[in-house]
Image 1 (cartoon, rainbow, N blue to C red):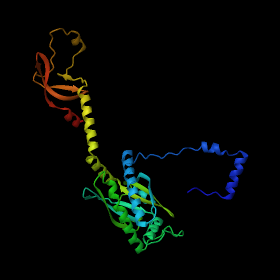
Image 2 (cartoon, rainbow, N blue to C red; image 1 turned 180 degrees about the horizontal axis):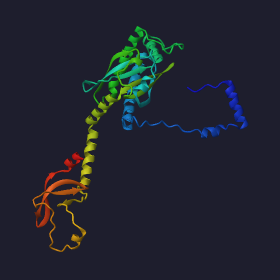
Image 3 (cartoon, one colour; image 1 turned 120 degrees about the horizontal axis):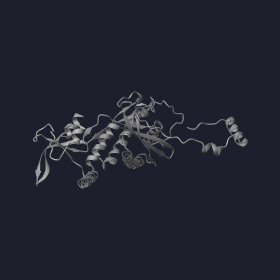
Image 4 (cartoon, one colour; image 1 turned 90 degrees about the vertical axis):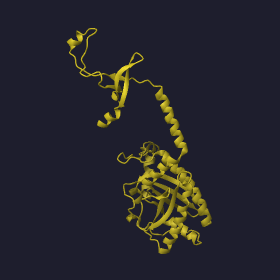
Length: 334
C-alpha cells in the first residue's frame, strides 16, 4: 500500500516544485528501474513452458469454477488468474496468520496418492462472504473484522463444504493433460504450525482473484514441486505429439550423422628414436616396435581409443578387423 502524505508534506512538496528545487519530470526519469534478483543458490525448477501450461490449465479452471459459483450463489462472480509463480514454501507460509484456514488436497496420479498434499487458501473475508451467500444472505462482511479472526465450528463446517466443491472442479482442467484427481481431505485451522512441506521446498503458487458485486477477494492454490514433477513426467510420457516430434528429430539427427566425415587413426604401436637414428633411416630399414604382429592395435577417433583390432588386408588393401569396443572402458576409468 502506498504511503499517505500528511498536509505538511504535501505543502512542502508543492513549494519545492514551485521554487524549482524539485523537478517532477526529471525525478521520474531518474528513477531506477527495479529488477527481480535471481537466486543462483536455488535455481528455478520449472521452465517457462511448464508455467505457461499451468496458466492455460488454471485459466480453464477459473471459467469452470466461475460458472459453478454463479449457479450456487445465484450471483455474478468473475474469477481470473492473477499470477502463477514458483516460490519456496516459506514465502507462502510467512504470508499466513494464525487465524487463517488451509484446506489440504490429496492428489492422485494414475490411482496413486502423492505423499505431499496440495493446499487451498481462501482469504477470511472472501470465505465469510461466500458462507453468507450460502445461507441466503447478500455476502456482506463486517468492515470491523479483526485480522486474527477465528472461525467458529459452524463456519469451519461450511468452509469444508465450500472447499470440497471448489476442489472437485479441478479435475476437469487436467483431464486433457494427465489422469490427475484432486480430493479434499482435511482442514488445518492453524497453518503456521503446518509442516507437511519443508520450508525450503519448491512450490508453485496460483493466485486467483474473485470479484463479486460487493466484494473483491483472493484465493490461492499451493502445488508442491514434487507433485508437479511427477505430473509433468506423466504428461511427457502420455503425449503422443511430443513422442512423435522426438522420434522425428532423432531420425533427422542420425541422417546428418550418416553423411558426415570422420577421421579414424589406426595406431600400430609407439616407440622412441633418437634424432640421429631418424636422420640415417633408409628405404628398407626396419623399426622394432617391441610387440608381435598378432598384438592388437588401437583405432583412435577424436583423441580417444574407441576400438581394438588386428592388422590385415582386404582386397589387396591394408585393413583393420575390429575386435571389441574400448571407449566405454576408457571413459569409466577416467
